[in-house]
Amino acid sequence: MTPELLSSISAILISLAASYLPGFSTWFETLDGAYKRLLMLALISAAAACSYALACAGWLSGFGVELQCSQAGMITLSQAFVAALIANQAAYTMTPRRSEG
Image (cartoon, rainbow, N blue to C red; front, side, top):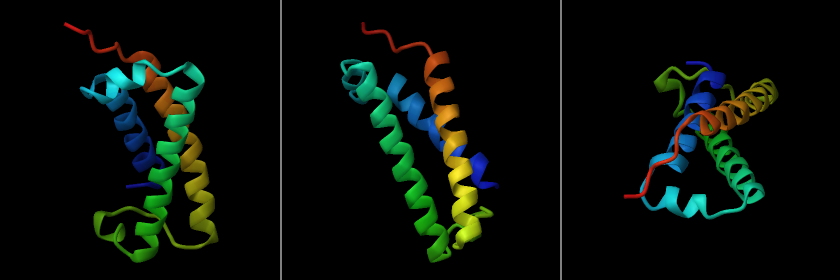
């Protein structure tokens, strides 16, 4: 599994949680648009940081994730981070909101 695919999947899952996860989605909808984007940025940044830490600990290699704990790995992760931001915003825009009822 490539870092780009892993980051895109995690970004889409974060977006789906913001749209459908009870409690979180209701709270998330009350936020201003700028705060929503900043929160998504923070969550994706945290996911990227955790991925790099797990790669450096050697835990991701067992799952077939091709992320190295090196300068090249950080560059790859940075590219994957940008792809994740794009995937997150696209997924959030395309998913219908959970209806209250």
